[in-house]
Length: 341
Ligand code: NAD
Ligand code: UD1
Image (tube, rainbow, N blue to C red; front, side):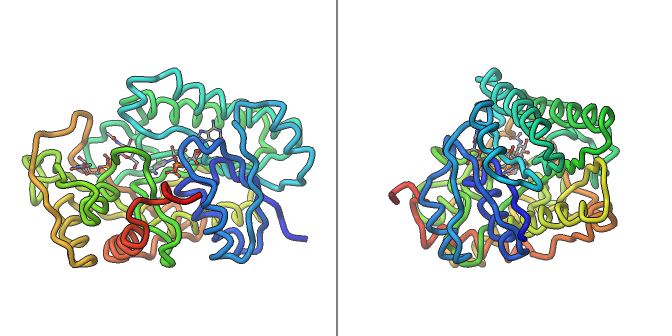
C-alpha cells in the first residue's frame, strides 16, 4: 500500500512542486488549500506532469471540523505543512492575519493530527528565523530572532514544535529552513505565480523580462560585498521538493525532531542573478540601483552540511538552471495562471 500524505498549502509554489516528487517517490497525496494565494487549475497542470490528479480539499487549516473530517476519511502517514502567509512587508501591516494563519492555523492542524494519531510532520520554516545575521554561512545552531511578524510566526511555530516534541518524543518533526526558493518545474507547466507586484527578486526579474514590468529596482549598490549588492542563497524549487521527500524518508528509520537548512551553501549577488537571467533568456533586463530596502542584510547563505549528513540531501541545481527554468515557465505563461479557469 502506498503511503498517503496530507499537503497543506499544496496548491502553492513549493507545495505543488513537492507533490510531483512525492508521486514519483511512490507516495499518494491529498492537498488541503484555501486558494488564498493559488489557483485550482494547478491540478490539471499537476495531472499533466504526473498522470495523477491530486485530490484537492478547499478549506482552511483553521477549520477544526474540516480537519477532523479529513483525518478520519484518509489514512495519512504524515503531513507536509506549507499553508501560510509569507509576505514580509504585508505581515508588518497585518500582523493578526499572519499570527492567525501561521500560528493558530498550525495549532489547529497539530491538534487534529494528535487526535488522529498522525505524528509525522514536515514544517516549512525559513532562513528568516536567523534574523539580521551578521555573517554567513549560517548553521542551524545560530541564534534565532525575528525582524517581522512573518519571521516571528515561523520562530514561534518552531518553538511550539520543540515543546511538542519534548512533551511527546513519539512525534517525528522536521523543521526545514528554506533559504531563497526560486526556479520552476522543467516542463514549464508550473512555477512561481505571485499575485500582484512580486516582493521577491526572481519573479520580479522574470516579469520584467516578459514585459509585464518596465524596470527592476536593485535595492542598494553600496553593501560591503564584492559588487555592492546583496548576496543570497537561491535554491531551485525542485531541489527543495527533493528535500521534503528526503525528510519523509528519514522517518522510515529515525524518529524525533530535526531542524535543517535547505540551501546550496553559496551566495549569489543581485547583479549576478540579473546577468545569469539575461544569459538564460536572451533578454536584456532593464534595472536601476535604488536605495536599500529596510530590513535587508548584506549576505545570507546556508551551511547545508547537516541536511547532507542527516537526510542525505544536497542541492544539485545551479543558478543557471534556476534562471533557465524560471524563464521557461514565465515565457510560456506570461500572466501566470491568472487567465486560466
Ligand atoms: P505559496 O503562497 O505559494 O503557498 C502557500 C499556500 O498555502 C497557498 O496555496 C495558499 O493558498 C495556502 N494557504 C495560505 N493560508 C492558508 C490557510 N490558512 N489554510 C489553507 N491554505 C492556506 O507559498 P510558498 O512559496 O509555496 O511557501 C510555502 C511555505 O514555505 C510557506 O509556509 C512559507 O512561509 C514557507 N517559505 C517560503 C519561502 C519562499 O520564499 N517561497 C521561503 C521560506 C519559507
Ligand atoms: C525575503 C524575506 C525573507 C524570506 C525570503 C523568502 C525580506 C526582508 N526578507 O528574503 O524573510 O524568508 O524572502 O523568499 O523581505 N531585491 C531587489 N529588488 C527587488 C526585490 C529584491 O534588489 O525588487 C533584492 C533584495 O534587496 C535582496 C535580494 O534581491 O538583496 C533578494 O530579495 P528577496 O527575493 O526579496 O529575498 P530576501 O530578501 O532574501
